[in-house]
Length: 126
Image (cartoon, rainbow, N blue to C red; front, side, top):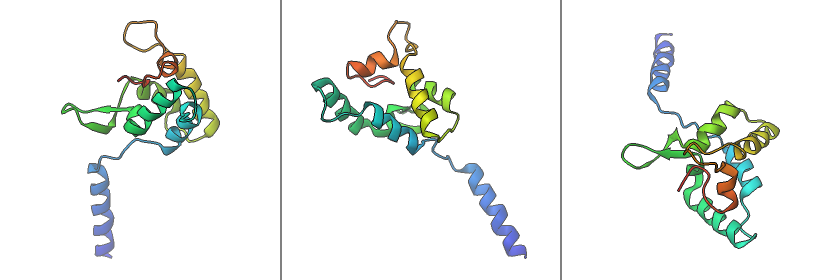
């Protein structure tokens, strides 16, 4: 019995110190379903190419060393995260994508995340 207890305690300690990724594959799937159009207009093709390059970094950001870090959210990912709160429901994800597209980018301009996407820019910045 003491071995079982040791394994349980050791597993709990490991779980506390592991940095779990906060990515949700469903978010990426619905984002691509809405905005990813590799066969669309030139702007849409360019945007699709950028999404292919950055992958999860559409929502995630860079750490202090300038490396991709899935534990960090960029402005777009942060705005989505506030609305979704770990939701995995397709309709709620799509509704959140719609709401965030209307939100202004927090850079002091009148530009929205949706405006960025329409002109082929990544919503979280380039």
